[in-house]
Length: 230
Length: 198
Image 1 (cartoon, each protein chain N blue to C red):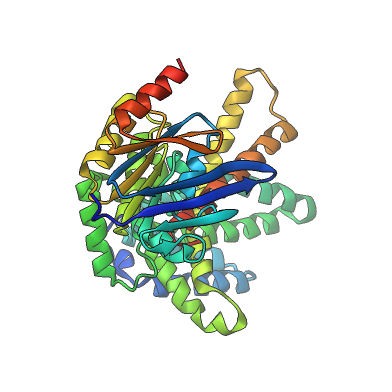
Image 2 (cartoon, rainbow over the protein chains, first blue to last red):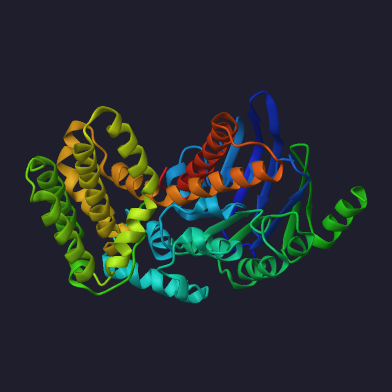
């Protein structure tokens, strides 16, 4: 376990427009599948967004896989793939293949290399038949798979998924959950309200009112969370 | 309104994107600057039809493209009929529609990454004047992508208003459309940053 690169938060606080979104969070994580739970507005999305530099700390230090999130945000965005809850807002190019290929722009790859990697990524996730389809015509589950393909083709070291199943039906939730929790080789940070998905992680963090109130074995963290919110 | 790529192996599909864009620009300029000639419109129409046939898209695709811009055509015609003789108004509109259908032929036969590469390399000399070719290419691709999204927002708002029995007025329609579009642009900006393009 300790061979995985570290995610470390050292006394991190974040203030937004007069509101404190994160308060004095300190933790070191080296597990492969990290679940993050908590009520709406508890700070879990802010925590996730800091992992690839979308949100900066007001105070404290965030280090992700040997990079300083504040000073090396550009490098971090290449190392950390981010999946949002709304798949529509992640589509940048008109067709499925074009959108996946977009992630490789500016990496100095030839057209053939890009095409090969796009074809192989789409095949892995069962999206080959949709390669030339307009991306916005896909179903919600397919769009979230597309978002995952668009992230994974860049070969990130860490995947952060912020409520990736929030807008999906039960079958697609299972499908995306299985891809994230079983198939990924990369380290995963999964922010979710779905406690069944959180239970499959190696460690679970629980946030409440901007504070990291608990972290540890998924079963015990989830049990206490359910008891408190019963 | 802007067509999405249709896979194919025709001459037009295989032609370099830059050449197609140059050909389109030359054709659009020729159609504009020879507006006085009675031959311009028929010749342009024949060339456009030939282009769609060569691309294997068929003439019905032209009708689909024209139908997609029917509101633009209507607005152009009505506003010109106020100030110009009907023949001139119709000829002007015909030229614009021809150019739009020709533009659609480019996007129907060219993958967006190829179009972006062509845009970026053709704008590269302008870098010294502060132009960001990658940024221009990205805006081009995202514009094509975002049009169906905004159209989807508009349809959602119309349905929601009908469901609540609210009459569709410009204010009750435009304000939520603007709010949804701004929210989408915020989310899209986050997604671009997360994908290293921000």
